[in-house]
Image 1 (cartoon, rainbow, N blue to C red):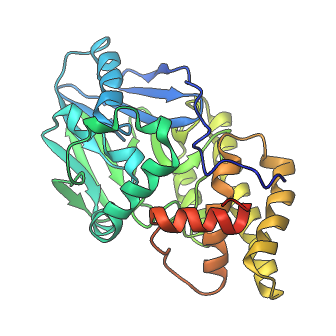
Image 2: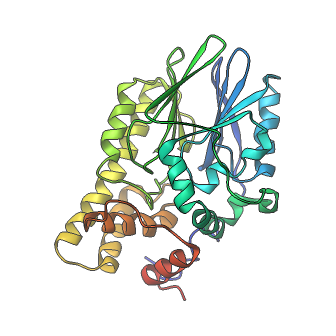
Length: 321
């Protein structure tokens, strides 16, 4: 493992090819080779966008593709969680409502500003035209706890909070008539789960609840749309395995009294054999192991990541000055 990695994903400059896949008459997936995905739900009388892209300029490309398939108004934006890369493009859609869980709202209030600064520093390419983001944060106009149902004409759209995992506010969108699930970052496919704000001990059980819906198609947070039951099962299993393997390794190291640096090196080397080819593996691992180490030591809730904490963590674990 090299000690000369560029901080986080600042070296990630390669443009990704966008795909816009139809999953059903009501569901489309905007994906880009492991970059953050956006889901689109088209009802009888309105459109819902699930996660916004990182800036309004980037969201314009989503809108352009929506307009290739429907002229219905985009009335709703759904935030699967609070991370800046998912929410700061919201203003481009000019929605009537921005929907989030109460827990996501709490996180925006508590750490939205720090998260925004932190993420923009980590991922310059994912915040193209960042100057197009309006001042301040993206605030929901509708919040819910547990479950909220919208009817877009005759199309039932279930907005569900099925448990903690990627964050405490994780929200999925389920179309029961079409059996299509938009998972946010609770599920990734051929992409490394970011777990810097995660609840490792809860995440596998939350994935079980997603599986219990029996989705036949699934739009993950990153990676290609999963277009049959086997692909969906593989996506759920892969995410579960990564989260479980990482936490088991870190927990064992912590229980043995080893420090974070040695636990990080051991866990990185062990997991790289199975997961090292996944998108953003090298970026996520320092954040993931740091959070897992905290959780293994009894820190129930994730600490806030600031731009300063990011850089210090990277320096400590990757030897960067």
